[in-house]
Each structure stands twice: as structure tokens, then as C-alpha cells.
Image (tube, rainbow, N blue to C red; front, side):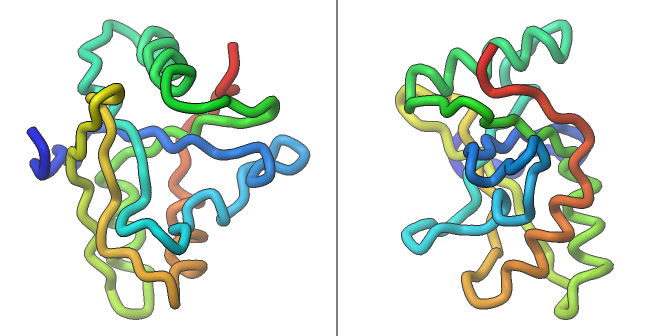
Length: 141
């Protein structure tokens, strides 16, 4: 339900645009807010209730293709919520407490957001988030 906190043991996926993945390596810029964003857009993988990561990724790819043009070279970064929150809380200068909330959209019911990021200091936070990436997958099949 919109605004619900996603359990820490669950996983989220971040779409990383091709320019954020030079030479196949995801950069910290993939985890930075754009000027018009209030949260970092992610997708809640357990929402899909799939039996495997492969099926979750296929569902996610289908969602992306319905919403926007998926760029060649784009990647999907998989993160564990607990690891992201703990890393940022313990290693950020201000002990930032991130929140991951469900924020479903009409054509993207798994859509969620990472909240409590700020535009003025987020490179530090973005680098910490990058360090917690567990898995990556091509955004295109």
C-alpha cells in the first residue's frame, strides 16, 4: 500500500541509465536524485511474489518496457534494504536514516522510493549505496 515501509530483509532494484554505466560499471551517479525528484525511484522485488530472481528480473524488465525506453547498456542494480540502510546510517557523516517506502504507480505497482536523500550532499550517500549493490543484470534481455 502506498507509503508503507518495505521490510528491511527485502530487496529493491534500481534502473541505471546507460550514461550511468560507462564500460559496464555502475557509477554512484545512478543513485543520485534528479532536480525534480523527492525520492530515489526503485522497485520492490518481493512485491512480484516470484519463485526466483530470474522471474523477478523478467517482471521488472516488462515493467520498464511499459514505462520508458530502455537504453542499450542500461543495467539493473539489486540491493538489500537492510544493507543499504545500515551502510548509510553507520558511515554517512550525519548518520542518515534512509527510509524505503512503497510508492505504486498506475503501470508500476512495485514502484517504491528511497527517502531522506538531499540534493546538496548526496554524492557521499550515493557512493555508500553503490557499495551495497549485490547483483547486476542487463536491463534489456
